[in-house]
Image (cartoon, rainbow, N blue to C red; front, side, top):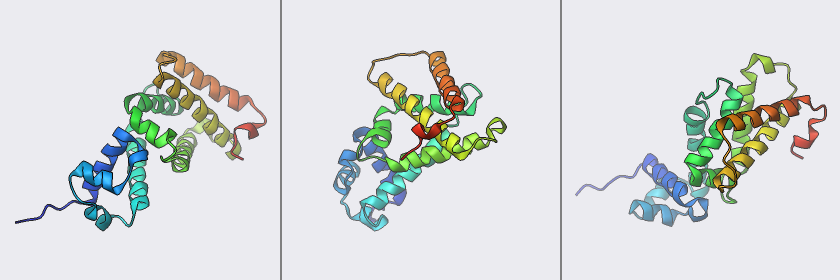
Length: 190
């Protein structure tokens, strides 16, 4: 009788389904194996340890976000679209959003670094922002990140229900406010 082979991709898919449903709090080899209906052995044959699996999974999610979620054109302004797409992602994939961006066990610093790098690549692709200093770009990222995360969280909790036009206005005002500042240090990480 032929044994069923569980590939790296099968395990990543199951791990993704698990964090999408339950977050990283229950991200264990045993829970992933249970979700797949297998023992933990195939997991450890494909990944060195659970941190290796988590890192690989988070990188796969980064790839999906950067290729399929964040670039969706909504207004034609790549930076505004990024903010809108982040908020839409938080609404449409709420559990995954919480697991990656909010949960103590989630991506945390990796997600911030991914977001920062993605934002920088977008801003540098826009000619009107070519003359911005590195600290201003970082301040823009952090300012917009704070605002869109706040909007996403408040919307998820049912506290606010702004229209897309209102969200666009807030994002644009955030950009303008940060660009008008001469001391961007308050938005920079210490």
